[in-house]
Image (tube, rainbow, N blue to C red; front, side, top):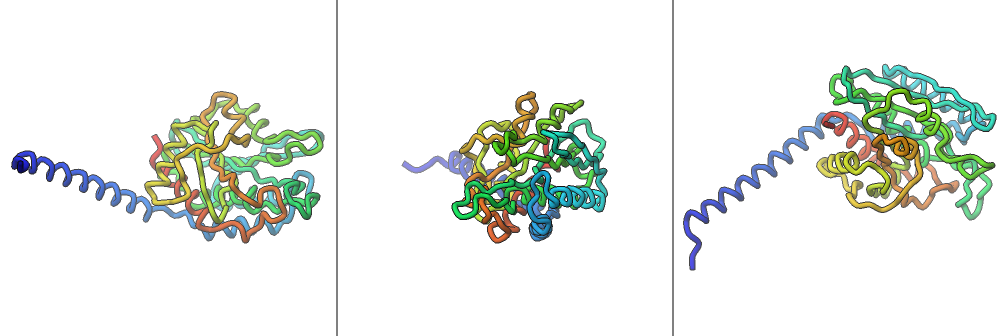
Length: 298
């Protein structure tokens, strides 16, 4: 029996509406993509500059130097740069905070750790040497500093702070805890932010970003959805790992927080965590996704 004319017309109309909606969505994403300014090559060079300082674990010359460099980078891009000094086990440490006023009540923190691990205990050949930290350390800092260059307060949906946490990566060495800087930051926090997004180990040339199990699900879905809309293959909307990272202290205080991290990195805590194993395109996928999300978040 043939399909009645009215039903056929309805199906054609419905199909046309679906196609129109898809076209409009693609056009909107394409328009957003053309407005984004985050440059992966710039971010890669920012990572390279960090490695020029050598090992960057607490107590090293490179650690002090890279902190001063981050302050200078923030100031050059017009952000207010603030130091938060503190002591841990008689070691002088400091978190570094960049603030941009956007005239909004909502506040968002983007964070990354800038220290590196003092020993490469996962390295079969040189476990006593420090980790260069191209991915585990430099990649997150590079994304935040390139965002500092491209973000304009008048385009943001919230007041944004960039926080560079100290002493995340010395855990289980000489009695040190993990994520020391973020723990101190949260302990001294007077006004909690509405959202926190940590960027860690996001430079892997074979980048696969899954939902971190402990992270706030709503914010995770917003960010991963934006990455998918922009056509970035790194964002995989499935849970995989539970990670103790700089977002953990915020979650313990009931502050919504997300960890963007690729833990499937074969050079983690080895001397092979070098520039040749990170990619400008990976940094760009993360940076542009966050840039777009900060312009459209609720």
